[in-house]
Length: 261
Image (tube, rainbow, N blue to C red):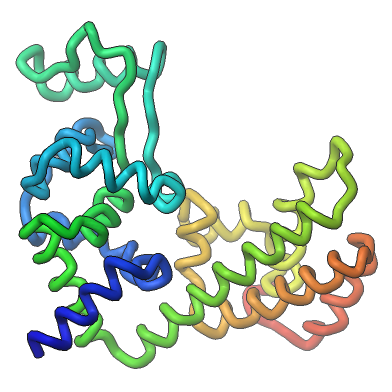
């Protein structure tokens, strides 16, 4: 078991795809070691991350520099000017004058819980990070086959969605309306499959953002979304206009009844 876990842990350190599989298990942070949050939005400073994982500030900064793209997807922000002043006030309101950011500070980096957890999957010199990885791997061993299939389908869907957005970026003409193409095609897929827009689905499920909306779908629903977005990718690449793409999708899924009323 020890060698197996060591091998899996190394893969976790090296594989962005595998990290994505575990990134939503942010509650592991509280199970391993208590976290003091800076704000009600549950963001943490780089210093807090270093203290949590019991490593130097430089070690955390190195991980952030090497894996910036991944961490920015999770939520890592550099606050300056008005945003920094707002954070300083929030900290004082929550923790009092004894806990505050120096007035000399001109920029302050904060991270979401997901970014916090991802750093634990990447640090190689931290005993606490090793415990985090072991917990995640143990959790994987107790997951059901259905949970594993869902996680795999979710990852496949992320890859195919990136292909769709890339196709939109590359093949749709650069006009003032292009920026609306991404949400329009997303809403088209949802409307064809579920009879509702992304906003309506979020309201129905009481969900705040689109990433969490995707996480709320079943494996079967994720498969259908993936299939529809793959069709959109192919037709956009062939320079079909939106009306023809909609016609093709509705023809393909005409007998589907999921959330439609």
